[in-house]
Length: 73
Image 1 (cartoon, helix red, strand yellow):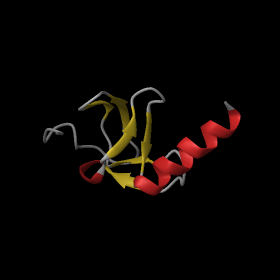
Image 2 (cartoon, rainbow, N blue to C red):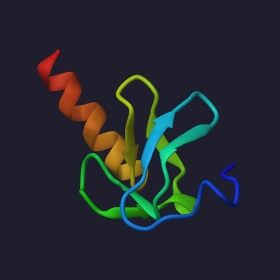
Image 3 (cartoon, rainbow, N blue to C red):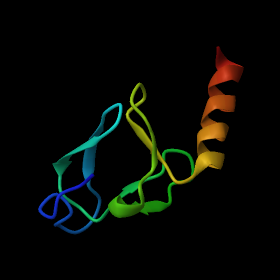
Image 4 (cartoon, rainbow, N blue to C red):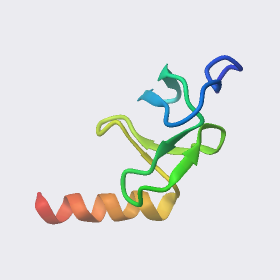
């Protein structure tokens, strides 16, 4: 998923989220969950939205985001 060089750096990474992969724009150790704000280590990142370009800590955070958006639609 992520190469050795893409994981380098410290602090928050900047990532472009694709359908089945990620592209690290600026190296870092983690990204932030768009719902909870918690740090997600890049190696542990499993959930994201291509459309929204957001990362999520876990399936519960994904569901919260989907519920929030269905209320405003």
